[in-house]
Length: 453
Image (cartoon, rainbow, N blue to C red):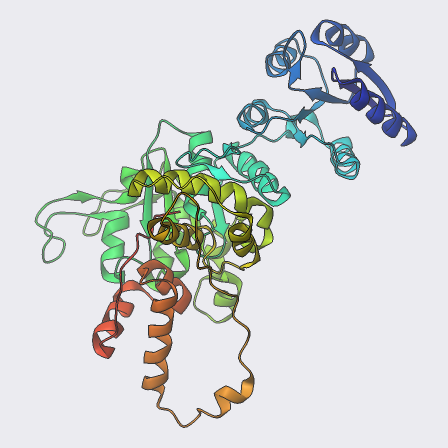
């Protein structure tokens, strides 16, 4: 019979969990504080421990750390009602199995306990850093939805190993933030080097990645180390890996297989010490099927996969994200928007956010600048209904050049001239987009910063 120890000073929670778990056929003991929990833990020898982080005679996190030092066995599932999950995240990195938020969901509890029943304590996962308060913290992932909590745990799992990671997600979901969270939790003192594969022309990307020797090509006036070398024993983040040309894919595959490379024009082998994290908004499976991406490279990159949920699938996080972003925007544009009326928040919740958090930040920035008082006034876009097929049929006589010009202009208008967003939506590289803008004489209102999240 599975043994479970509940450590919580809330009598209602203890009683509810005890009745529920015993009803599921499990043997249950309880403790109200650290003083009593230690002795029960040793004598009872539970397989699972439900541990509240806030106990009357001490800190649950410190008690968890002490239990590890003393060799007390079992998988620890944390229980926390804190709005800020930093302490829970720290415990996850220390080896806790999972955590549950109050108020407790008994179905979720059953799911976690069932999973824990078939796992060994050595398989415990850790977590990443996450911001749950309204305060904006650069580099933190904001949210309290189930999807974000699961993302949080997956990041923690990735942080415990040195395996290659492939991050998937729509534009604006925060792929680089996730990569930085893995870096921060695995090798924070080592370099984090990001390379946007869509922002560098293919002829220069090889030199950017591998470096070059003096005189290896016209303009190579000095030896230059590449980003793979500069990353040292840290992380090399290859953003938009789907835009990498086939020739370079072959060379990257060899680097991942051999864990070494040569500078362009060089003969000496340089060891690859960095961990490789790649990201894309594209379907690499479809690209493999279409012959545009190497299948062997795809599997080399996808040792661990992290999928970031789009904002429309975690709408409950929008108020938290909006509040955090408003604090940041207020400081940047020297405003003091303090109120988001319910009617305005409803607009944010009803929109599907194809550009995700990046689009939300752009809209909020515009709204903050235009709002006359301290209450936010939003002109939120409406979700577009799909146009009937007949509209396309009526325009079949138009030249391809005209259709392409109009489509690119529409995309640029929708993303407010944000170059990175436009490239991702159109599925083309920056140099290609620049050429088409020039050839077609398109209007550019502004060019946003790709890295804003």
